[in-house]
Image (cartoon, rainbow, N blue to C red):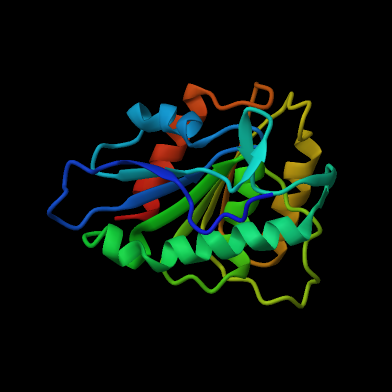
Amino acid sequence: MNRVTDLHFLSSPSVLQDEEHPLLVLLHGFGSDERDLMAIRPYIDPKWAVVTIRAPFREGSGFRWYALKSLQSPDFDEMAQALALLKKWFGGLALRFPHVPPHQVIVGGFSQGAVMALHLGLYEPLREIGGVSVLSGYLPNPPSPNAAWRRLPIFWGHGLDDQILPYALAQTAHDILSRHNIAITFRSYTMGHEVIEEELHDLMDWLDGVVK
């Protein structure tokens, strides 16, 4: 395996390029790539800049953030490598996006990308992140009740008919996050392992509330 040193990404700028504006950073799911989530750009207010980042490890015709030993047992070595690369990428945020204030950066993802977003938002001391968006994700091996979590606002959308990551996983995560006094906006939808228009409208409403 060739070692990845930098992450490839796509960027869709804000209409407010020379003024302060928010940024939504999106992480794709297992076996996909950075082009996938850029498809939701039309549903995001144009004042937001949107970035989609490609995972570092090849998976078939796409990429992954980490290998899976089982559904809830990631390869934590690969996950740690991917998190290190993401932290490096966020470390250069001010140079890439000089008009984005730190508290106006939201990191989100779909499926495996949502897991990575949760790790960056809850466990990593990244001052750049002001909230987390989870689209059909889960919490793998949650830390103990005494773990120090950052209390960032979270949007969580999940399909009632999800056959890949069953809805029960989302309910469990909701209960854990709520017990840690994390402000979570939790929405369920009549859908499978996917993203639908209704969910994107709810996400946009949440983004508007988080970033004033």
